[in-house]
Length: 417
Image 1 (tube, rainbow, N blue to C red):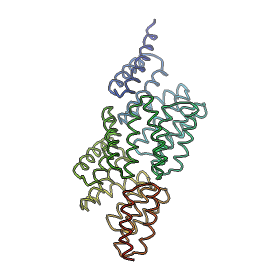
Image 2 (image 1 turned 120 degrees about the horizontal axis):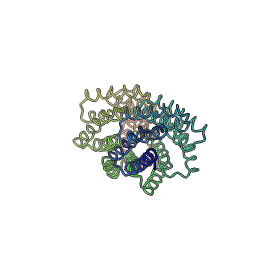
Image 3 (image 1 turned 30 degrees about the vertical axis):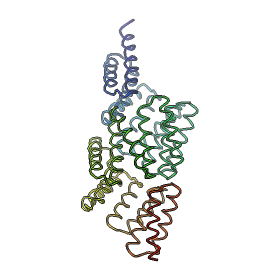
Image 4 (image 1 turned 180 degrees about the vertical axis):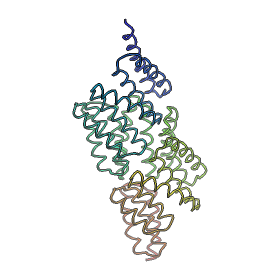
């Protein structure tokens, strides 16, 4: 066996072992093997091998939220693939660059690169790459609050994955469809998709994927105000994420746990989780997550009657929502501002946005508090309609906690009419 042949064999061995390490959550060991493989590849004239290794390394950087390193390697690989006229490689590199921009909340850049990747994948009939691009275009529209578009791309992606019989990617898209249905208040459908996704991930031994399903199932139970069950799912997901070193997802879990503690008035635990989440998100510079964390700070300070602190975080959250052009988050921030400032104008603006987006759960919550506000202003007749709308949505959702609150408010309102 000559020198280059031996090197190529070692490179393949390092790649294979790194993939196993990555799959079981041993990120540091995976990175060491990939670094060894890249060192060997740099000693050969085989640029294709080098580019492929660079792309493998970007996957590990993504899971560790090292976005700048990931972008640098992806662009280097893209340059090599272009020189080689490797259309499949170009599509993959464009897709990974889009992943970086998506993770950083730069959605327009992400959409541009995903579409370029999709165009080439369809041209070379790479169904696997095309299905991934379709799925991630759906992710962008989901983050922008354009749920009907997101659902369209997710379902288109799922059809390709079913043809390919690719269980791993099928599970991811089933999960994404479940997340959409949760967002628009179709919780039975949501749980069905999420549980199907979880079962596939369990079957194939996808540890990270299982944690993602646990987090999303917990979010559904949270919306249904079944807090103890929700907390169990969140804590189980957090344990996995921390074990495998996924910082971004750990921060998401901590934020979700903080939401429950604050909602149930366990302020000390809530603030502790929220600060841990904010610390991680600031290091990662993820605008989407930071915006959500800021909104939870608003709720914390509102419940603690620390109005100036709440106002500070409302401004921070609104600035990020507008920078990302996220109408969904803008609608929620306006709702929080309306409650804080007792502003009918902001209630109306929030409702207008949430109605357009079909954000059923948040819309129902906003209707409820708008009705409470109108009652406090002695505008009793005007309070009837939003309360009815809130009850209709929560009845369909099956949120007993809010339905009980609505009945109490309705009893109060009837005495004043």
